[in-house]
Image (tube, rainbow, N blue to C red; front, side, top):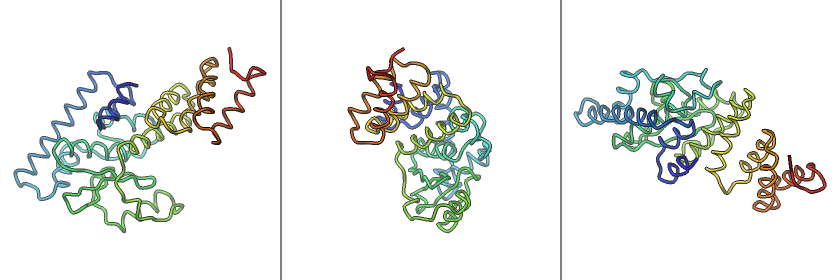
Length: 264
């Protein structure tokens, strides 16, 4: 957890993503080495004049040479949200495919922005006049009209277009989305311990938010650590008074018995 918090604080996106999957040191080094190697090739193509645009250099390396492409089936498993797996298999969810483009581009000295549209994540390349690129779909470029269509298709028309969908997101927002994706997978699969870990990372990412802290308490209770859950519920009540999570925490404590504390 300390590695994750330090990576977030220092802006180390690769480190934060690898911490989420609890990658060992050797795997961390392997992934970083590959990303840096690919960035050197992309930078070389750009510097040599073999390509005109930054996006073309990245596409040449990541798509044409390495065959990175999206896989919708990854949305059903945690592996599609794990950077080491995506780097090894060259498949993954839109947000992880975009993260690879962002990391390789940044290591090469290019500015690559993450764009978190509803239900689909893409990147923007400011050096290419703000060109929007879809790493999940072989790095194809997208017009604003095509972005609108992507959102409409991905949400089956449930979400109306807003221009703010094309604003760059922070790394914290990207990591939050990755953790929410993992949470959804673990809820569906019933993997409570894995869900607990994902929520714990979310709580570390958003220490001033009531929701992840409350869910951490509930999962602690569900896993049978009742003596630890009580103080967590009390913390929610004290730190976030007046919120629905404080009320829910109070109800859980009241349900524990006349002492108002959970106990084994």
